[in-house]
Length: 316
Image (cartoon, rainbow, N blue to C red; front, side):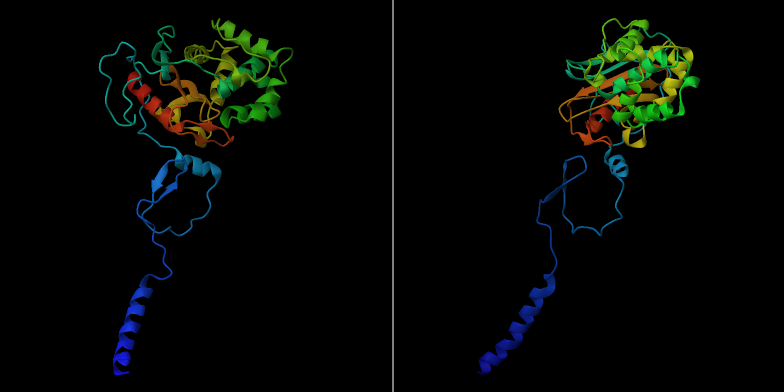
């Protein structure tokens, strides 16, 4: 009995020591959780206290990798014929597109638009939401005779929604204002600036093919005031100002006007715009993780940031 009584305090101490971790959950070594981009993120600490819920747009902005912003370039750059590509931060290790068939960057100086330079290549180039710019250009040409001052307040709101937050319903409403064949009206605009290879359908313009080189031609013509009219061109450039959640890619290197297009994790993500004194276009065909955008479709944000950073080096 004395031996039993002596063991009781020892047993009580052992039980007290074992309760030191009771009620606490410790993450097992090597456990992971999914980030906003779908990449696994190591978790080695207890879950932090909950924060106030963020809006969907705020979550998207936080999920976008932001490389160092480059100043707008001032003069010529390299391209296919360059020697060793420049090393530097912001490109995520991407220093050349030589031989690359899933990514392409194209640019031309506004002072000499025919001097188009290109690096990399892609075998497909669906327009996706970059086609919204063409729909609006055809509207300006056919509905208001090239005079933006004649656009109704309702149509201004629709165009703004289509070009800033890539609203699909808004661009369809604008397209329905175009008399006759919308495809013919869009194709006519393209032919007027020298694009003899791109043709638009009457519906689903996002599925049409529009090469990066022809997009550079279009942006150069827009900057020169040759799309529909000088007034229409200037007004259209002013509308190409994406919302903050869509300002990845060209938006990280100082583009003054640009529009992107995207759809799924397997399809093309692309942008065209004006960066400094250049008309530019960048495109990737399903490269890297895809991030869901405010319209519910997915864009290859990280790869577009890398391509934009590489383009900035070529321009500078």
